[in-house]
Length: 375
Ligand SMILES: Cc1ncc(COP(=O)(O)O)c(C=O)c1O
Image (cartoon, rainbow, N blue to C red; front, side, top):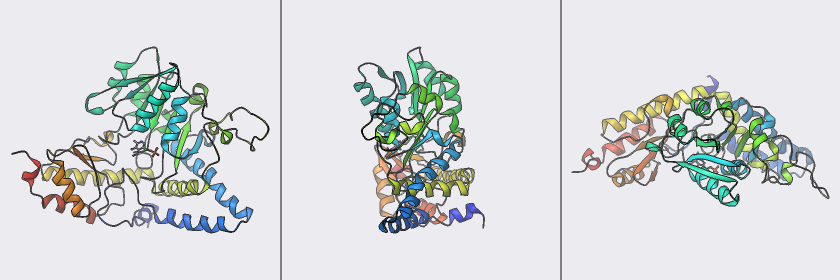
């Protein structure tokens, strides 16, 4: 068996799970790590504690490897949003962002701008379909713009932004701030084009909550003041009776001591994805998305998410005229998805089985197609 086959064999959640874009059931290796670390921390032995503490460096190292970055550019964070807080609260000028972004970008940017005494402002854009395209960004550019903040894959539409093209449009003098929550670990891309990149482990990495991380490139560190830096951000021993400046590496964007247990889960989730190969995972997810698109088309359900492989990842957004019967049928059949507003979001992972896709197909078939079309 290849490492990728081994990876696929670890998907042991109940059939019907199609909600990876919301929450990832913990992988067996992450679950084993939790028990092992709990035992280590129960002994009181300093060498046992050190083993768990070491997982922070390991998480940063593996994330850096997957991002094509230097380990000194990585920080662990309580969540992706905390990484964005460090980025926005320390920024100045106008930051372009879509109004339709997940609140981790939209609300955090708004709050940071409100607190900035006019040093920072949000330059909101409302592109067609919510897609943050190079053209939509180009229209909003002027000399005041210092950064673009964008989700690599949009939580609602499933649209995958073209990071390289966005970088090209904004140029090297502005920062590219990327929320990679819905892509990291399942999409191979040139992540190094982002100056700030945030992600977390509780969806596609199957590592549970508390597993945020953020990368701050040298350009980001030059231009983003570490205003939320706390005692965890000095890069040395606990600063008692002294007031040292923030560290010169990315650890400056840290508040307190990390949650070692969470970092250990993240390290294991990242390691599993690296060993399996992100390209292999991407290919498998794309195949399942193709199968879901085929099911939707066969039953006449309109799809709002992109079909082109390069512009999508693991999210299929079904937008029938009447979403309630679809949502109810999925729930009754044990298919787990997310219904929000007028759409039902379905999200498979590499290990999604044919059984799960069959459950989706049969649940939809059981409704009758007339339910999706207004009479
Ligand atoms: C695109 C996106 N960004 C951020 C988040 C939230 O991340 P966190 O809870 O780690 O702050 C989510 C959660 O669904 C998301 O979809």
